[in-house]
Image (cartoon, rainbow, N blue to C red; front, side, top):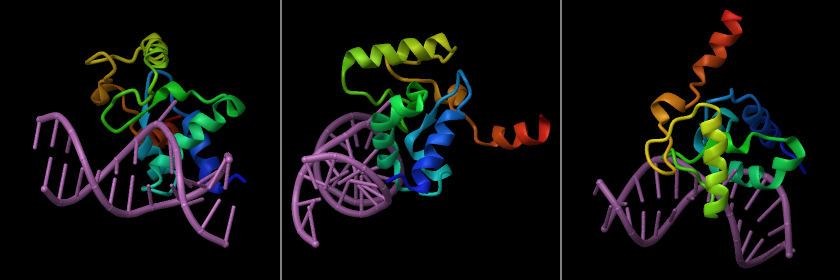
Length: 112
DNA sequence: AACCTGACGAAGA
DNA sequence: TTCTTCGCCAGGT
């Protein structure tokens, strides 16, 4: 069963612009459930292939890559760097510059 | 139907 | 400031 929340999350993730990232909590909030961050992670590792989601643009609230396997982490880091995302530490992303500001959605709507 | 799990997050120690 | 604990939602077993 796919809830509306889940679909919204998927949509959001799909609309993350290249070179930007979102945190689980942020996504959950934008999707309507501020406290369903865990669900977001679940969606990712269960629906990534199906929906062809840019999973690498989703990180945890600290700006760290949330994967467990070092190998996967490096892979994600590579993908992100390729898109222009900068890292402060080994697996820490510079949120100040790479976090996708939701306000840009409105700007896009109004501006373009 | 009950219990477990997860790429999380905020709060308390 | 770092580590631990508790709470959350939806799906899986």
